[in-house]
Amino acid sequence: MSIVSKGSSFAATTADESRAAEVGREILAAGGNATDAAVAMYFALAVTLPSAASLGASGACVVHNDKTKQSEAFVFPPVAAPGAVKGTPFSVPNGVRAITLMHVRHGQLRWEQTVSPGERLARFGFQVSRALARDLQAGGGLLGADPEARRIFGNVSEGALLTQPELATVLGGIRQRGGAEFFQGALARTFSEQVSQAGGSLPVDTLRSAVPIASAPMSVSHYRSRVYVAPSPAAGSSVLAGWNGQQPAGGTPVDSGGFAGFAAVDSKGGAAACAISMGQLFGARVVVPGSGIMLGAPNAEAASVSPMIIANPGNGEFTFAGAGGGGPTAAQAVGYVAREVIENDRNLATVLANRRAQGGFVNAIACPSGLRGNPEACRTGADPAGAGLSTIAQ
Image 1 (tube, rainbow, N blue to C red):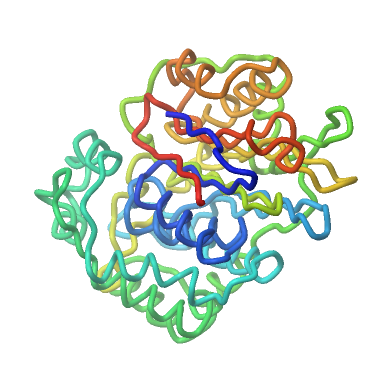
Image 2: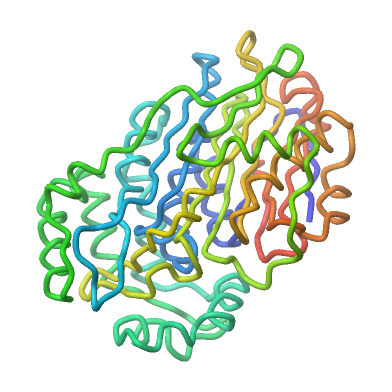
């Protein structure tokens, strides 16, 4: 599905799960910028698509700041925790810290406004989307060994109301006391104790020392613009391979594969895109009791993520933002779609429809002539082979 801009201004979101895309749109409509929308989508996805994007996931984001005309990458790679839970290795949850830093540097709404939509979804419930239902159908049986995961997600089907009160409490603490609460405050101590009670080991010092990488993105030139991707250990090089014309291998995924992508663009030309991974479908397949947090798996493939943004550092003009889900080759697929749309001047909807999700699902926002130069030509699209959504904020 691709949506066309109908006005003189343009702002849009796209994500692998529909309710998260709507949350991003609501943030843009409330006066938030692209970073605010991406932060809100991150917390919403932790609730609505924990199979691919829980608070236990690793990942990478790239932000284009229209005020400074500069871009910045935030990489939070998978790091194995010191002790497994019930014999299952898991990743140190480091995404909240990266998203907090991203908001501090580039957001403009109050922090509480970006976290509260996800908290409300967890506390009061949401109707299970096709994206989560698809993942539960494909991998719900994998959760059978964990009683907490089975309690929360057992017998859940599309359209059912799903509430997650324990996760709502965690998000409430993050909303009230800031993201730092999760990696060095009372909430961090509580979470560490909950992991210990589950038989694992995650000292507060480990949470505190899991610092995300904030740096200049890897980039290459494209006429007067730059193609920005996430640097190593993320998979920016895979995106650039797709950008250089290397079509990714692999057929249409049947589920998220534990990977999700989302992006937002605001009417000023600011952009933010993130790619998140649990390492595999439902990650470590363990929910920490009392927290509602599905832990990620520290697989090597979990680092195979990278969003992509194309923008002009001279005038701040934006032309493309995208991120993918469905598997570790989604990063390369994003680069390939961007090349077809921006370099080869093809219609975004046509490109997404014809690629048959090869290499994963791609979510993208494109303004081939520039957002300011010709907003009427802007498009936003979610891969029709996936279960996501693209929206325009009017």
